[in-house]
Image (cartoon, rainbow, N blue to C red):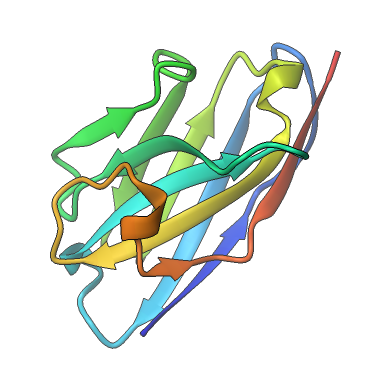
Length: 125
């Protein structure tokens, strides 16, 4: 079992930045989990944003955020981060982190086993 708690969401103006955090608590070593970030805007399906391997050596991004968002992790703090720069109103959504054990990189939402409760990000124009 893994409990995931996101934080760092809020209201920001277009062009601004936010850093989301996802703290994990688990009986298993955090580095054994591949982690991902997804988002869901009102009336839309959940969308893959970024993924990172357990060691942090490998990452993957959706085309819509490539070059603007950066996923990272600190395995000593059991935390994964999403640095979001150059935000636009189209980035407004609830952002979720997710975890799956013993996988390298996962970009498909239904392949993740554990989810956080989400954090709201609102970008004003």
